[in-house]
Image 1 (cartoon, helix red, strand yellow):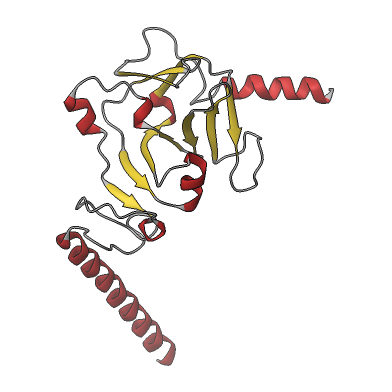
Image 2 (cartoon, one colour):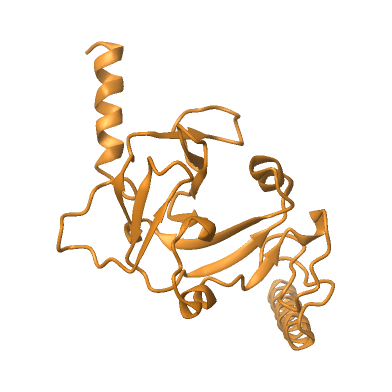
Length: 209
């Protein structure tokens, strides 16, 4: 098989898999429509609200979006249906700095270069500013629920929602994060630490007996 033929097969293969596969009419419940700046890429969403919504302040997002932070809403790969232009996309792997479709990667419109999504191995991160949120209720469902990598921020945002130094739930809460969340995090970590100490003591006693 020639290299060109293999490449064509690979391209055809990714179009058949989520999030790029086209859903049959009647098998996709359309809740929202979305499009890039030039309109060459259009897609639909079937989920009423994202699984999560975050503001990411990591330096990669700052550079890739030429902005102080990235606002991303998390969805399953099957929650999206491209209705136009899914063959007009381009990819960028920020880890290896390549344009191959290698996960995780950034996905953009190849014409206006609007960011379409971040494609992970299991989920996709969509950008709410592309989604046509026509009601206040819809906008509220996409509101950010936390900040991540806030220690790398370029500007302070005193909005009172949780602010994690790195990844949420695995790093530290800082600045004006809700006090009750900070206290609960400290309780959970103390409980985990005490459990580790107890397990270690039991192991030491078993070895010495």
